[in-house]
Length: 343
Image 1 (spheres, rainbow, N blue to C red):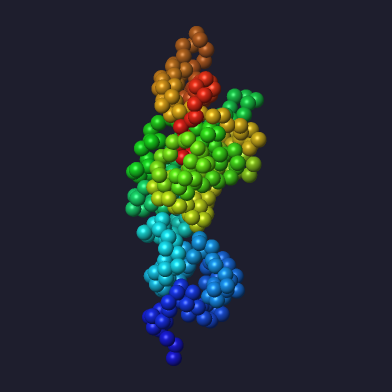
Image 2 (tube, one colour):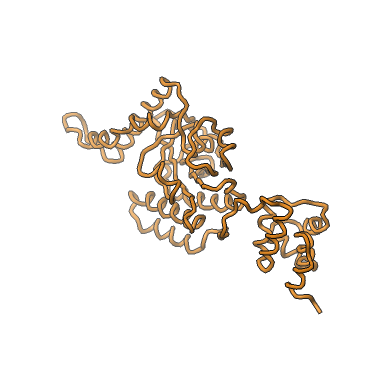
C-alpha cells in the first residue's frame, strides 16, 4: 500500500528528502523537470546532494508542487533563510491572461488613430500594475519615449509620457513632463538595446552613481524594440528589493512586446540613430519646462501674418525640441549631474 502525502511529508527532514519522496517515480521526476524547464537527471542530482539548484529554480519548486508547497517552503528556508525574503506574500500568475489580448485588440481597433496610442499604453500599464501588485503594496510603471530629433540628427533624449501605479512610487512622475538621457536607467537600457535591472540601493549607487532614486527597492527598464528600431523604454519600480526575479522579468518582457503595437512606424528609430545626451537635475528642468504648455499654445495661435498656425502635434514637437536643446545647454553650462528617475 502506498503512503499518503501526509505520512510521506512527516518522515522528511530536508527539502531534498521531500523531493526524493515526491519524485520517486520516473514519470513524476519527468513531470517536475518539465515544469521547471530542466533535465530529469538534474532532479536526481539534487536529491543526492551532488548538485545545487539556482535560487530562481528553488523559488519555483513550491509552485510546481502545490500539494507540498507549505512544507517545501519551510524546508527550503532551513537551508536558504533568505530565499523567500523578498517574494510577494501572494504569488501572481506568470502569464498574460488570454482575455487581455482580446481586450488590447479591441482597444486597437475601436479607437481613432489620434487616441489609439494613449489608450493602448494606459490600458496595458494599468493591467501590468493590477497583475503584479493586486494589493497595492508599492509598484509602478511608466513609459519613456524617444523625443523626435531634428532632420539629419540623432535622438538626444527621451521623456516620460505616461505612467501608472500606486503609492508610494507614483507621485514623483505623475502629471509632469520630465526628460531623461544617458544618465538614467532608461537611457542605459536604450543605448544597450537590452534590459537593465537594479535590485537594491547598493546596485543603484554602482550602476547610476549619484542619481536620485524613486524608492529604496528595485527597478527595471526594458527597451521597446521592433527588431533594430526603438521607440523608448518601459520602466518598472518596486518598493521591494530583489523584486525582479527572472520569472517576473519574463512576464514583463511579454507585456513590453505587447506595447509595441501602440507606436507608429515614424516613432521608431534605428538603434544607430540614438545618441542620448545628459539631462540636468529635475529642479532645473522644472524651471525650464514651466512655460511649456503656454509656448505650445502660442505656436497654435500664431497670427496668419507670421506664418501658418501649427496643429497641436506640430506645436508640441517644435516645443519639445526647443526644450531639449535648452536642457542640454543647461547641463553643459552647469556641469552638474542629472537627477534621474530610476528609469
